[in-house]
Amino acid sequence: MSLNLLGLNRGQFEALCADMGEKPFRARQMMRWMHQAGVSEFDLMTDVSKGFREQIGASATIAAPAVLRDTTAPDGTRKWLFDVGTGNAIEAVYIPEGDIDDESVAEGVPVRRYRGTLCVSSQAGCALECSFCATGRQGFNRNLGTAEIIGQLWHASRSLSADLGVERPITNVVMMGMGEPLANFDNVVAAMQLMLDDHAYGISRRRLTLSTSGLVPAIDRLRDACPVALAVSLHAPNDSLRDQLVPINRKYPIRELLAACLRYIEKAPRDFVTFEYVLLAGVNDSVALARELVKTVKPVPCKINLIPFNPFPDSGYARSAAPAVAAFRDVLLQAGLTATVRKTRGDTIDAACGQLAGKVRDKTRRVLRRMEENRA
Ligand code: SAH
Ligand code: SF4
Image (tube, rainbow, N blue to C red; front, side, top):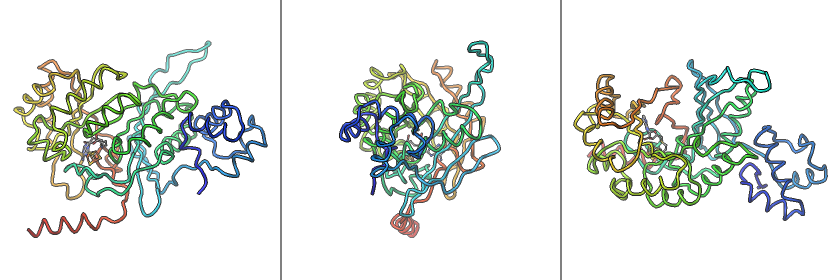
């Protein structure tokens, strides 16, 4: 298999150029062609010498995962289903936030500025089995490679630029698609380094958010390797409830998780952590639990993002009713916390949080186990 250049971060690409007897600036030049101009053919890289283009083209490719489906919802949310081979598919979702600043003027010419977020997947499936998550329900198949992770952004950027006619349609990236990004640490960090690189996507650390269910040692590693904005899927104020919803809590309980958050903030690009809290009717959405949550998160500078549960077939959960959501939020606000309710986007195309399922090969083990549980 030939080397896929999409998966190389700057250091790796520069090392490759050095091996081939070229100067490091070639790597930066080619990165701009690939990641900024969206070019996948070496022949189009006109300022790179023909000799080098032929040399590198003989042993390397530039290839994003193939698109199986491309769907746009009435609210503008767009979802791509990518083929990652051997029967597996993953999804990326674009959430447009529209023109942010029509007024800004550069050199007398009004500039159309745009804001939009891409939600990127890190694994085919997920091993962590959170009880309310469609990805967790389907089980784990494999980690995505760096080229498969960055390939989602590469493909989305070039399609959106062409279709919307804006230069940088993706201003924010959230590692919140399928999978647990910290369970695929090295590939996710390499992909995030490309997202941050000025010769690639140039996204600021504050606009790149990684969401984790709480892999404590990996949170510490991320702090040192690539500190970006951090979101932590909390979902419950105490261990007995969180053990049920987010099973990894049995290994890394809330106290240890919060301590890791505090350590992370010391190096983070933002001075707070975002706690995500999916509201499940009758399970974790009572006013009493909201009060307990206030006490639990108190030691950590944070914002709380309440996520209305997004249903999927046989989930066994229901979305909290609007008054329950408002009552829960009000308890947090009255205690002086910052709390927002996430707008549900893209649910008509199953692109909302926790609905991403792609397609993962060999669900047999899971299905059999569930059949046994039902029988018992
Ligand atoms: N594995 C990481 C990131 C992917 S999930 C994590 O768990 O944080 C992204 C967010 O969607 C998480 O906060 C997750 O808990 C939430 N989520 C999962 N299933 C959901 C559902 N059915 N409805 C709403 N949010 C959900
Ligand atoms: Fe995995 Fe996150 Fe889903 Fe939990 S919520 S199963 S960690 S993708």
